[in-house]
Image (tube, rainbow over all chains, first blue to last red; front, side, top):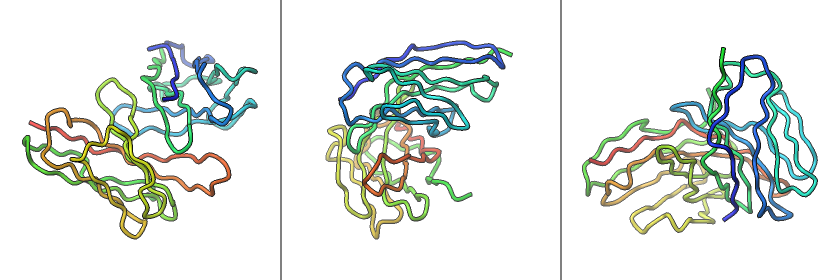
Length: 108
Length: 116
């Protein structure tokens, strides 16, 4: 199974940037890195994904290390609505491998 | 709202009973996935369909579990002879894949199963 390692929890002050790290040392050349987040009592929500290059969208940025063994999800200005569990996922073939994720607390 | 829908949202059953869950994907999505999520854990892949064909099953999917996607539209997940260990959130996701690049999965709200 493709494995990812994330801190169990992180805190951020509202309106400050947040950097959520993920290690995926067993990544293979064809594995995409996906990030999803999950609010309480809801299904996961897509955030961003990438293969080799850094990626930006309206929700976040994804910085991928040159060796691809780690990545960082960047929320540029955390809001209270960003409080959720963030999953860094390796996609291998047709399966997504979720870990336990990082629970992000946003402090007003 | 044209997102992924699941029914029922909650199901309480007694051990040994059979239960069936339904998932309606986003229209025109050709892929449909089922996941199971227990408290404090991330979702675990169970199975996926490409149109009506079930192409992959996790070893987590015991012979008490069966999934179908007739006509490549909605899908059902049936659990026979439920056990207390089956208590979990069952999530459905759909995506459109042209096979060239990776696809984005859109998740439903889930069905929470409690086996007494």
